[in-house]
Length: 139
Ligand SMILES: [Zn+2]
Image 1 (cartoon, helix red, strand yellow):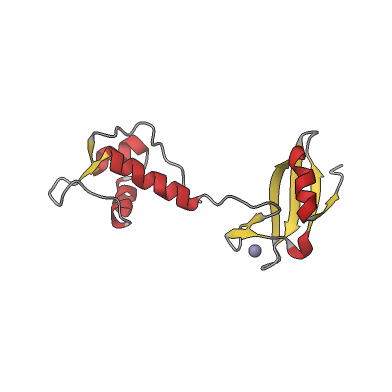
Image 2 (cartoon, rainbow, N blue to C red; image 1 turned 180 degrees about the vertical axis):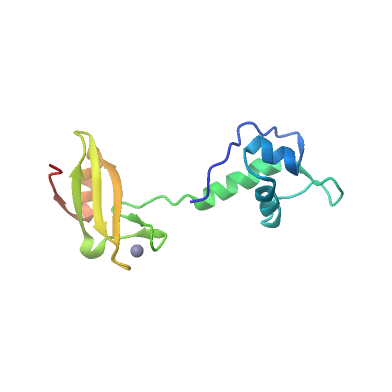
């Protein structure tokens, strides 16, 4: 997942120099230059390099959406595969951490490493429809 940036202080109708945008967003000048290489639009090709606030906002919003991966029912985000995966054998262990929720533990069906997902106890019956869930006592 890409980092979330401080975008609320970017003004749409303001043209920022690279160092100004870096300061407003809270990143280094090098990071802004990486964004430009990755497709952040510039006002023109002249110096100093200027970026319109609304274009920076659109660019960062698009990156954030690209990096967010909503999980399907019964899916786990595998940190080794870096994609959502179904657990091995459609089995998971539920470890309650409070009366309202807990952690589902499963094994990635591809790389067989451990995956965890925090869930609300309300969602457990739905997840039990697609996975074989065993409840474990944490104590
Ligand atoms: Zn995996």
